[in-house]
Length: 499
Image 1 (cartoon, one colour):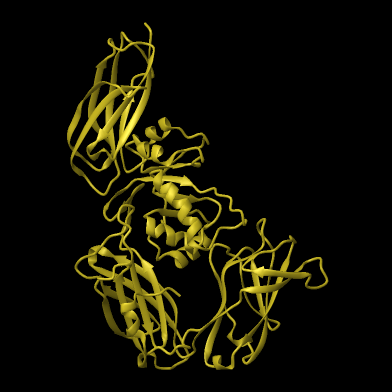
Image 2 (image 1 turned 120 degrees about the vertical axis):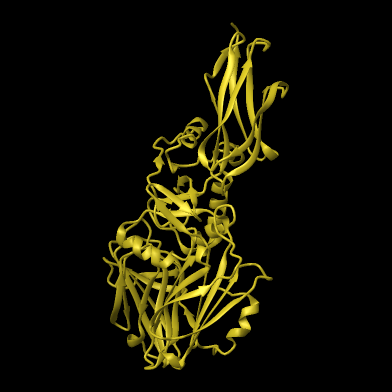
């Protein structure tokens, strides 16, 4: 369970220490294959099996204390890599075929307290590897009242956060218990704490929690996060979310009431373990490179990433889109929907088919005023992120040279425009240009434009006209355009040959 800020912990001191206990199921599990007479060996889980088979069974023995006599007990498997059927002490307690989300089973009635219990997870593999990764544990909840589900729906322009809570329990009068919601900016010690008390009117409630006068929005430029905690009786649930509003106008997505222009890539990493990691660090490395390249979207064509991936993307301001089928999509939204990085819909972006994506192709995609974005097939390891960021970021100067080769009798003419996918219109920008040789000698320079640049992909800045009569040929030259502050720079090489 995540840790809320220390300032909030004292507010929940009344919750007994055994209110929400867990028992880890990590360790040695026996396994058997369909063609074996019994359990053939042991495997350490979480992890993958060293063998393959048409059907697999995993068996584990765990002691469940007698103090859990007034508990609802759930088996939680964060990321099984095969369809599961679960048996506890010989009784089938359920199954799940969706591999994109955790598998969770109520095993209360099948358990024996104060002794050891046998858990068997079996099923048919779907992929190349078989196993269970991530958290594997038994989770106890208060039998009288426990939190079944919490979903957060931020509405930043109404200054509220809608919190949907679903409660379960055997107690006849749930209004006997208190319900409390606490909210605070994440990782900001001085942030104010919002605390609201509610009466439990029914088992399913939608609460409008005031968000305060000053709201810090989430987007790719300012990935501000909030933490929210829900206390009901002896139960406590906590999650992290972002204050952002998504909408759609035709094929154009809007984020926080401005157009969202997508620069995406298809995620094709092959993990050495054979499955997507369930901890943040590998995802941070992958996503930081995409961010450094100037991208803001990662498209998962073959699978849904783990919760750790969404957590890493939340912090970086990167959006993730898992392209699963409709039944899986509902489960994905229900499981990972609080993450602001999860993009629930994807407009009709331009998809690049060729594997060798070049600078000219990306610049052409940025210059398309009718497109809400593009999706690249991959980013080769040979690409230098800082170089790519020059021609693939939220603000890019674009020059359209009439040709790539000239003679000294020609005149270079280049129309220039600006791709602006920042957080709004730019009131004032200064664009300058210079032409240099391979020795970095400047042969020509000038002020191209001074003024505002609206939000949008195609904003004209003017035309560069430079006679090449004084250029000593043959020689390779570079046209460089610099926007205010030298943060956004783009370059184009061209050749001047003999007449």
